[in-house]
Figure 1: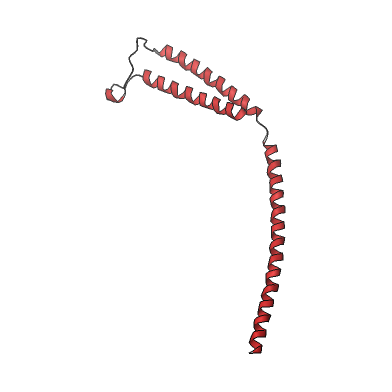
Figure 2: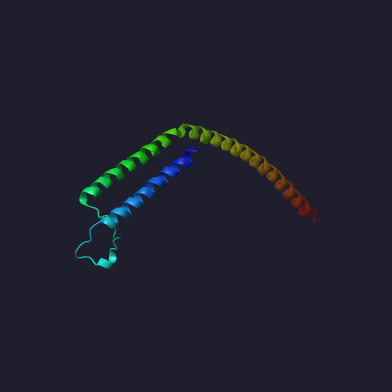
Length: 131
């Protein structure tokens, strides 16, 4: 479904971003005044240059753009919020009807309770008057 595809694209974008950040951190030159132990650099046979890093940055940015376009295309396939508003309005109307019905039942029970209370008072008054 579309939601799963959106989640997958977002995951791809996040994973790619984390990978690229890690790569550029590993390739970054160490500050001469920094403690070498705090910046472990992987030693490969291939050494990045400013030009190769610029090319990699360009390739990475194009990959991010492609993933972003895919993400936007998937977002465009989602249904509009208008449908959700209609469903919410229908649900609210149904809840209002149920609430009104419950209110009417409560009023009926309240009237019945008042009547029963009056009968109890009248009975207690009659018992007290008979003594």
